[in-house]
Length: 293
Picture 1 (cartoon, one colour):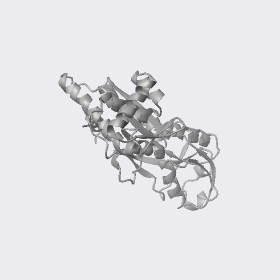
Picture 2: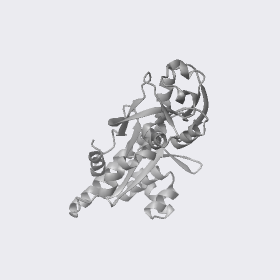
Picture 3: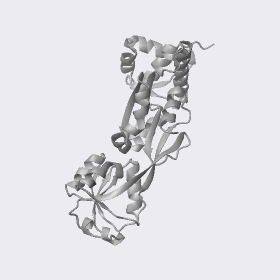
Picture 4: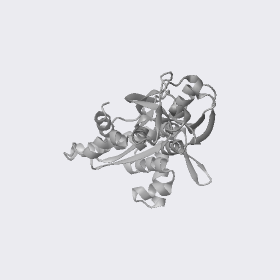
């Protein structure tokens, strides 16, 4: 009969999320030898290694990937059992790992996390902000519990739920030739200088789709942050697709001008995603309920 302990599961999960035995031992307040011994004993009990070893480094193997969500679920269920037994079921505790694409993480983090953080003071929220590809990877690898990105994910392992509408706008400096025209047409965009997001972002995919409808231009810069693109446009280095939520004040203050392009479709959805194998415990259910899911 398998008789692994919660501590062994904690070590396994921590090593996976932290990337090393040393880092896992530190957050669990264990010595490194104790953490290594706990992992070795767990693998012995399971009759299978969970990591591939190469030059002292650990890489989660396929067996480890299969068992990781189950280990996380067992630990979360045990925490819930403890809370119910102590009559503290109204108080949520624990760590909640949230991913957000750059637009969401930089401009909508209050809408995404505000109610949850204010309601559950004993929950520690860890927010990772990156481009959509990296965030989806984190969800698939179970290093993120839930995430919010632009658009949907076509992956059978991912559950995707529409959260809210969003929109891109093409922006230029107020003195840009296109900003001075009253009625723009597709042909006006010929040979324009474009500043785009980096490859791997959902915004880039939408931009490429809409650029295919316009005459050929020149991509003069690729930047990884919306704010950097906005400042480049303000400096007159080119025009760009920018999230509406990111440019409202710049347009109101006269630093940017929105170009009217009714011939383009710049609407998009923001989606909440999580792994289908992810256990929907009380933390997850409370988070989803507070953002209207």
